[in-house]
Length: 316
Image 1 (tube, rainbow, N blue to C red):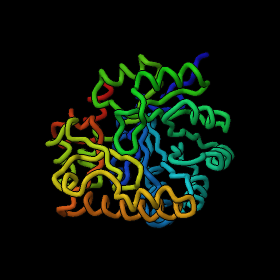
Image 2 (image 1 turned 30 degrees about the vertical axis):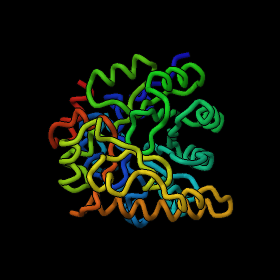
Image 3 (image 1 turned 90 degrees about the vertical axis):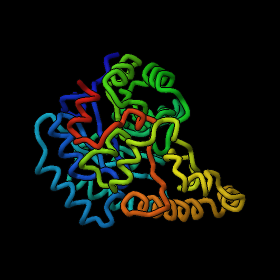
């Protein structure tokens, strides 16, 4: 069967989404992305209040140009107590698309489709992909083992080929793309487009400190490690001296509490809040506690550049 392309799904000129990144993504990045003919996505959790979230949507809508598109990422599990209110705002303002992560997208798909919003779902394996397919998702974000942040376990080729052949949904690959040859490779595997994050951390427009951006220039793929210290779920970070000092594994107390059926939900929420607070300080302030989230594609980040230049490197 012929599946819709990413360019046709979002009415964009180039098959690329600037991936949603906690603290990094902002309206400046998305606006420059839209001008360059791609889509941009921002985590709803980047905004403390619903008014700030709504204001960002209005700003993006006013700046939207033909060939560009904008959307938001929703954490849809119970640890996000803002989820339902954020979803309501996104539906009221009719954003172009929503990307769901870390939970069931059932309610999001139902509510979004009522107002014509497309929903793409993060998946890391076929089992979950089949679930969101039955729920009516519009596309799959195939998070592979080269992605930054909370990555998958499968190689890009294995994951894309399996999802493309065994579901009816278009597959958007996430992870392992920093230049044109990478994009072409993912498309050859069967992807209809790509979602790219880490190469855009070191953009002029990103919302993090110059130190964080420069770290993405100075460090490479060999410096990326998995840590359980942020959310309890393995997450890729740059192996800075501070990360080396504190280690990457949960303490036995944290591990024991995380396995307790009664306490698991609350431990996960507290761990997430503590971890995100640490990441926030490291990303936006000068601090010795350098916990910088990134993926191995920073290997090809050689300078801090405008979003438009990074888009060209990947798509031209």
